[in-house]
Amino acid sequence: MADHCCDHDIPPASQIHNLPRYRRILWLALVLNAAMFGVELVGGYRSGSLSLLADAIDFAGDATNYGISLAVLSAALTWRARAAQFKALCMMAFGLFVLGRALWAVLGGAVPDAATMGVVGALALATNVSVAWMLYAFREGDANMRSVWLCSRNDAIGNLAVMAAALGVLGTGTAWPDLLVAVIMSSLALLGGWQVLRQARGELLAEGRTADHAR
Image 1 (tube, rainbow, N blue to C red):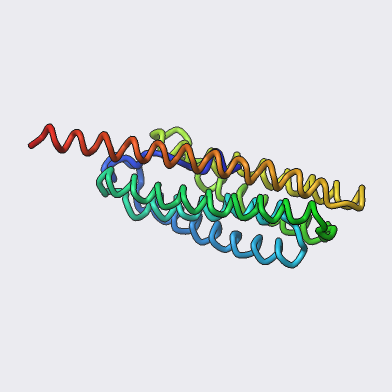
Image 2 (cartoon, rainbow, N blue to C red; image 1 turned 90 degrees about the vertical axis):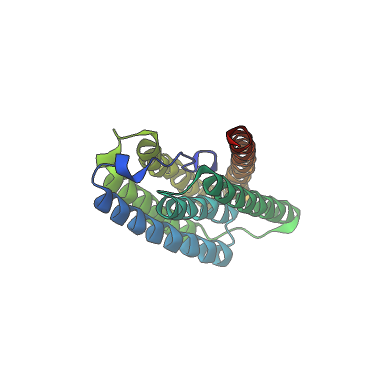
């Protein structure tokens, strides 16, 4: 889920085996994750499912990471850290939004549509499995490549959680399973965003000290 949103160092392009293929796969992964972010966002609003909205955070974060990977394959650490800060702030803002919606739902929210939750959750699972399969060939590469494919593989857990929440809603006729999954996932988004923010700030400070010593 959001606490393992593909936060990784980007190696020099010269160190990436079969760079053209890797770049094509990253582009495809970016498009798929961005599309699923939109699907889960619309599905979450229409079904009233907060767990779908929370799971959309993963797809937004992953799409951002794939975009960052493409944009900064040869960029300096400073730009990568600044991009990570932006992503972390977006993650935390969306996490707070979902938590606020969850609190509102506790006070009088309606029961979400379990069928929509299940269908969208299954589509999200298929997307993450497909991306992980495409990146499988790079799993034994450097830490960056391995973390990218592990991210998609692990994000499938979030999709399974949404599908489990759909079954819970269907079985109990209440919104509590959906709310529970939403709170857990949005809390992880807040924690993950805070960790990324701290790491990026540390990288910027370290880069600044290195630049000062070089003068």
